Image 1: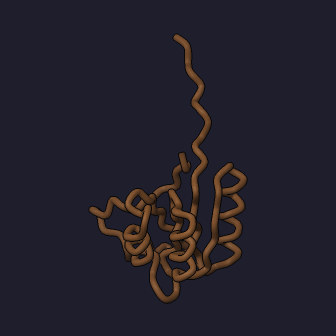
Image 2: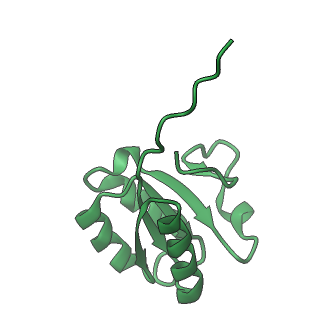
Image 3: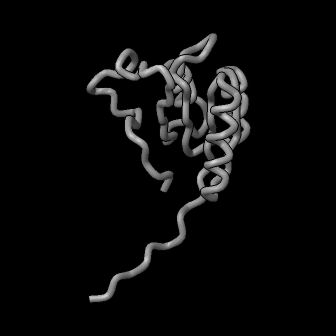
Length: 116
């Protein structure tokens, strides 16, 4: 029995949204080192602008954003062009995920996964 090697990983367009600029920049750098494209927004309004320009495949959203929380931002991103298939990943440094997610909410990824 021969094992086939996996094909090349698809290059993903990733939007990182976090008001903590150091965290957002570090996460973006890691994503780019992994071979993907990355854009950073430090606030929800800029995230919406970038999403319209870039049509990301994946969005990593801080849950505790100013002006609009990450859940509301995720819902809004889903309504823009190309957003129907957007993979949303919640990011928080405050352990606030339980406050936002409901057991039946399947539009969010709870655990770290590869971007393939």
